[in-house]
Length: 321
Image (tube, rainbow, N blue to C red; front, side, top):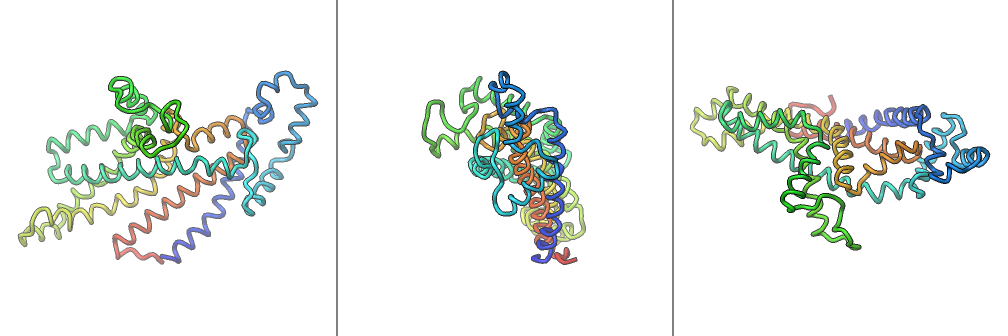
């Protein structure tokens, strides 16, 4: 296990290097002017000489490779640079926001895995039954539903029509303190929407895996020996049927990140979404590169986690093969 994790870590280095360079290259080709974004309304009345001086001060007048190399060498020493649009160090921008994004993603992912597993097992017990047909139809419908549309629908129903849950933010309006109760109530809707957007894939994988396992000879033999149906389902079919779902965990991380950005934006959740959007539109090189590395690292870690879980669940899979 350690050898595989080490190999994956080493192979991640060139990937991250290529990603960061790609970010700087795409930002350089962007039609957005970082100088005008930094100057704001003052840039409308500034002279060309003042804009040129500001361009020198921000370092955006230098060649692309030079800007990327300076950022990379500084990042390796722990200095991620200063965000021009946020007017603060990039490390502080990420530290203030990544915790809230991680909380939202963890709650949504956990809810999606648990609900998908339970519904998938129940549907696999009676394939073609009323529960299976109903939940499968909902799953295929939700697969095509964008996360932002689900978020707007949830706000309309739970906040506007029922008035049961807040529609956005982290705390109540006018509150200057962050309490557990307020965060929990404001977390429900975005976590629910993000979890529902990920639920169909986990449900369909578990349903198909458990249904296939129930038709295998070992499970039939367990039933022939007189084992209780619950023991056959949970002790034999579920373990075998969960293996395909474990490989899904890593592949869903990019979709989870994309969905989280959309959901955070709709619900005004104070995660990295707002920073990402501002960094992209303002061509904030240091912040944009750091956030992209963070997202790429999460994807690579998710793929490694799915491989480790698969290997632990199935001893026939060798970690060092």
